[in-house]
Amino acid sequence: MSVTRPPVALSGDDDLALLARLSDARAALRAQIARRIVGQAHIVDDLVAALLAGGHVVLVGVPGLAKTLLVQTVSQALALSFSRVQFTPDLMPSDITGTELMEEEPGTGRRAFRFVRGPIFANVVLADEINRAPPKTQAALLQAMQERTVTVAGQTYTLPSPFFVLATQNPIEQEGTYPLPEAQLDRFMFELKLGYPTREEEEQIVQSTTGDVTKDVSPVLTADELLALQRLVRRLPAAPSLVSYAVQVVRSTRPDAPEASAGVKKYVSWGAGPRASQYLVLGAKARAAMDGRAAPDFDDVRAVAPAVLQHRLVLNFQAEADNATFSDIVQLPAPQ
Image (cartoon, rainbow, N blue to C red):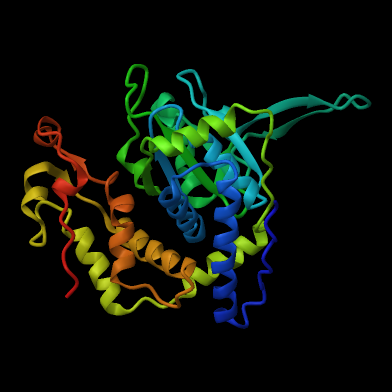
């Protein structure tokens, strides 16, 4: 049974009404995604929050957890253009951004270069197994992720709006992989770690994927509607105390800061930068908007903190030797 598409106001005259529409759209979006994805409800919510905040996401999980299917399903439910790039060691930057080709006009024989756009020119770009490409190719994404533009042969091209890079990584296969540089990791708003399904969920997955019925996904929001909701999220007010708390949380991850915990001082070489503070506030706003609330609170900041911070910490050898987890290292300070 298809889900009725919720009406979304685009005028912006009544933010409270638009906020209510966003909450309805979230419910419809979750229902559409659940037609193909079993479980992973918190991952879906975090992914939607990142999209509402305009941030990029890296999904980390072992093979077979439907990371690629989740990204494809989200793009279909949002009626966004989608492209997939399978990252391999021989992938070149031009394979992502595009290249210029020499063409000759049949009648005149006049030759000219024509730019052929690469797969980066889509609303949702799936960078599948992003850590398999060499650093030169990974760097081709940096300008696109930060500036939403691509420069080829001295010419700058604007990418579609909205624009998201959703990357996947396999954490257990290290041969032939290239760890992402910290500068690129910092461009990802969230790192979301997918775990194994429960026994009941796995039985449901096997049952639903071994039949001959393919479940379709109906669009819930258009690109223009999503852009309107992104602007609404940014308009939500953040109290000075909440901004101060977000900064305190980020500063507590820096081993040389007075706010640092014992775990941070022991295991962290470098903590998160100011971009993490921005993403904590934006993520908190997105969570509040998804719940139909007009302002975020401290619990929203704490809820998004692991996804924002865990990939921004540079751990030392002691952390690896002790197999320390994020919760072992970072103790979120209490709001003051």
